[in-house]
Amino acid sequence: MLPDGLRRGLSQKGYVEGRNFVIEYRWAGNQVDRLPLLMADLVQLEVAVIVTAGSAPTLAAKAATTSIPIVFTVPTDPVQLGLVASLNRPRGNLTGYNGFNAELAAKGLALLHELVPGAATIGFLENCNPVFELPTRDVLAAASVMGLKVQILKAHSDPEIDAAFASLAQRETKALLVGSDVFFNNRIEQVVSLAARYAIPTMFAFREFVAAGGLMALHGSHPQG
Image (cartoon, rainbow, N blue to C red; front, side):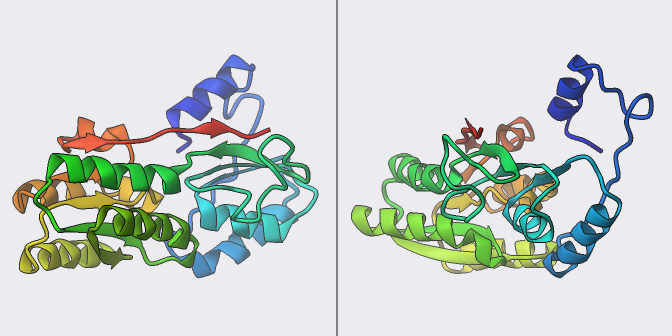
């Protein structure tokens, strides 16, 4: 399904799915290696526009076509990701929204430190995808300035999320920062439930986690193009 905000925006412009336009949905199931084939399929269908959510799908779409317009949402700087030439003048066939969550992840770390000043080590839960090296780098840099240690936790499946929280408890890590990847957005109840079970103060990247019972979230966006 389309995100509600995108569906409302299309409706405001007179586009109603099934009435005057058709959407070709493609899901990778969090398997990044499937993305090139899925994007190639969309290109072959000659779709009018490709909408992507996340860094990995957007990079795959960029590699697949230089002519079909691509509208993206990414959590980190699209210039550093190589998606656009600049924020003010994207050029090429890509435009979209940037959450600047690499910078916000560092801010989230600072807020967690204020909330739990006695925590010498703070956990950082991220997806196992190389495109998330930018927020990890910023978090580590911020931690160094604050004199904190960061326990990096990688998860690519539901069992790995469970194992990450068990590792936090085993090492008695006192606070956790959760990355902004869509992978975690699809597992809000699981992550919030585990944070409550282990009684670990957790900073999330989206307010939906707070609505589900999470402690707090820090999120922002910046339009591209």
